[in-house]
Image (tube, rainbow, N blue to C red; front, top):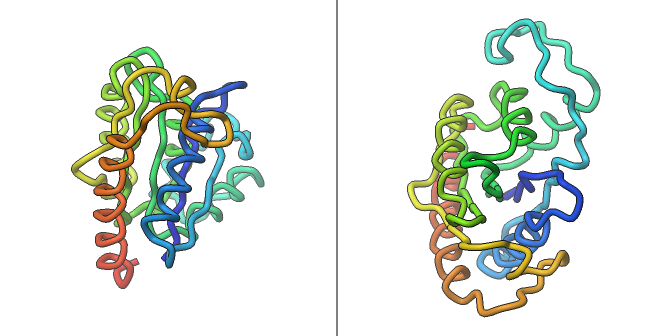
Length: 189
């Protein structure tokens, strides 16, 4: 089973990278049999969505190379964990842009959401669920919310700077749901 942890921010010095690295390490502990990969949007500097036809309705679509690389990468996964900060009561534009380029890569695949920020990323998670429905992804009912600044809890390499036992417990339950859904849905994709 292939699980991708998507880093939903590209800002320099972003706390999201450290949070995502910790999440990936936790998934490896929870599911040693799974192939876990960190997918960093900073490695896919896509233009703003600029296609004349919605990707889901364009069978003759011609993508720019960086967009095609993003699509090819995420098509490899059986399930996803999207780690997002909260920016101005929503999720980052770069993450929305990346989702807008999808056609069927996330279709009928489970997604766990991990939000961080002053409200635990709750507004970002709420808005992200709506966007994921648009690309036919299956958003897991529970999310992991990390209250406060992720950079104060996790170093850039993913090492916790504080007690994160409660967060790890929440994430662990969500990872188990993700694995069950990914296994059940894999024959369909």
